[in-house]
Length: 192
Image (tube, rainbow, N blue to C red; front, side, top):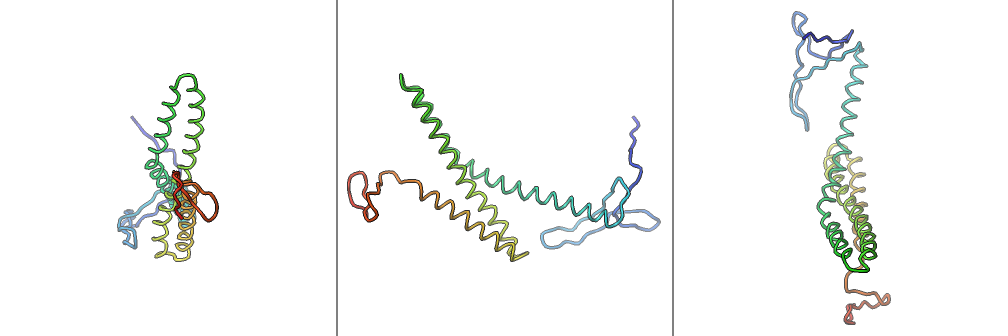
């Protein structure tokens, strides 16, 4: 079958060799990039400045999509590691729902607790996952652009401190706070 291209103009970034034959332009390797060949064809008429702007924009947009996707995947990875905690509360809720006479009330209470656990796990996984992603990004940026790298390292510290504060807010099993000076466990033994 016959295929036809509807483009009426073309602009090309390539090496113009002898006799008007174009070929890919060899590129040198630089920090973080390997060497290769480059050529680009646009299906419309563009000036050199417009073509360069178009290439920069497509590179910039793809770069930010990958950055955001990487941070979200890091968050999701930590959430998946912590998901068994949520699953345990779900299983307990299912068992409590089978108790005769009061099962529906216990199931409702268990669902509320499971939702709260899911929120806490989500917040903690966000803190840890995003701080890990920002730490990796920051280490690279400290070498490339120190100002941006230091700002990202500060964000990592804030996220990590947030996760630690969240862990400290969760009460420990068996420890009751009687007053500011004395902490006792369930047996009444002094732990301060």
